[in-house]
Structure formats: C-alpha cells, structure tokens
Amino acid sequence: MTGCENVKPRRKSENLWLNLLFNAVIPAVILSWFARRTLLGPKAGLVVALLFPFGYGLYDILKRKTLNSLSVVGFVSTLLTGGLGLMEMNGFWFAFKEAALPVVVGLAIPLSLRTRQPLVRTLLYNDQVLNTDRIQNALEMRGKEPEFERLLAWASWWLAVPFVVSGTANFLLALWLLPAESGTEQFARQLGKLQLWTWPTTVVPAGAAVFYILFTMLKGIERMTGLRGEELFHPAHAKSRARETNGTGRG
Image (cartoon, rainbow, N blue to C red; front, side):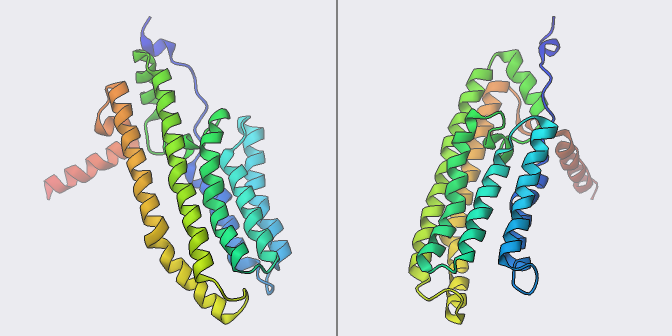
C-alpha cells in the first residue's frame, strides 16, 4: 500500500479574500462612510456592519460545520469600533479603540489553536497560495505531521507578537497625538497625523515581522517535506510564474 492511499480526505479550504472582505473590509467601510448621520446613522450603521461577520460566521457553521475564528475577531473588533464611536469618546478611548483590533487579533491567533480552524492556517498556511494537499501528502509519507503541528504552534505564538506590539504602539501614539476633543476640526487634523505616523511606527515593522515568520515557516516545511521552492505553492501560481519566465525568454 502506497503513502498516497493513506491520505485522509480534508475539508475544502475557504477563500481568504472572501474571509477578509466580509469580516474586516465591508464592516470597516460601513462604519467609516455609510454610518454617517446623512446615510444610515451611527446606530443603524453599527448593526448593519455587525451583520457581515455574524452572517459569514453563521454560514461557516451551517456549511462547513466549524467556527470561523476570523468572523469572531471581526465581530468583536467591529463592535468595539462602532460602540466606542457612539460614545463620542475622548483621546484616551480613541487610543483604546486603535489598540483593540490588533491586540484582539494577536491574542486570538494562538488561542485559536484549540479550535478546528486555527487562524494561522487562514493567515499564513492557506490553500489560496500554498499547495496544502501536496504538502500534507509529503508530511504523512515522512511521518512529520506532529513536527508540522509544532511548527504551526510556533508560528501562531510569534505571529501574535507583532499584532500585540503594534496595538500597544497605536495606543501610545493616539494618546500622544490626539489631545483635542473628538468631533472638532483640530481632532480631525490630529487624526490625519496619527494615520501618517502609524505606517513607519507600526505597519512597516509588523509587516517585516510577519514576513520573517512566513519565511521561517516555509523553510521548516521544506525541511520536513523535501519539497523545494515552487513545489510548495499552488499549481496555478507555479504555472503563472512559468508563463512569465517563458515569455521573458522569448523576448
């Protein structure tokens, strides 16, 4: 009996982009634009925004029989953002809001290891990019599944660090840059300055840390499976890369 005959059927991986769209992007757009008083209003806007992560999470429970961790994070972060917005908060509470989302995501990543759908599989080890079927087959044939699970646990705990650190940095930046009362023109200018400072102080360092964790995880997968380079990625990505190479060669 060959190793391929022992491969267990796995659930179809869900679409990462739909996940992010329903659980993060659409709620954020509704709270930022459509929840103004001239459209939905803040209270109705919060309810509509919450419907998207709630509905997507409920669909996952009914369709895939699993709790969507990203939907839980999206619902909590939307509730925090919209709820605090209704309170016309001062700089301290706005700073709390700025820190809430990355901290909630950061803490949820390792905690989700106890669920059937760890967030690390959604954020890093995702079938939209990686050829997870091929990787899983190689892991099973080499008996490396326990070591691979330890690698995912390592990635989860370290992936939490840049989120929590960036949330803490956002909190301190907001306290420093938002002394004015919310709703004033001065507060709006200070908010723009906060968004500008966020990129060099939190977004870029956090992005670099996530890239390093992903790079280290891929190297670990290569070592465990014996696969190299493009063999780790989904066939569609490999074919696209091959077409680009051939086109360059003909030119």
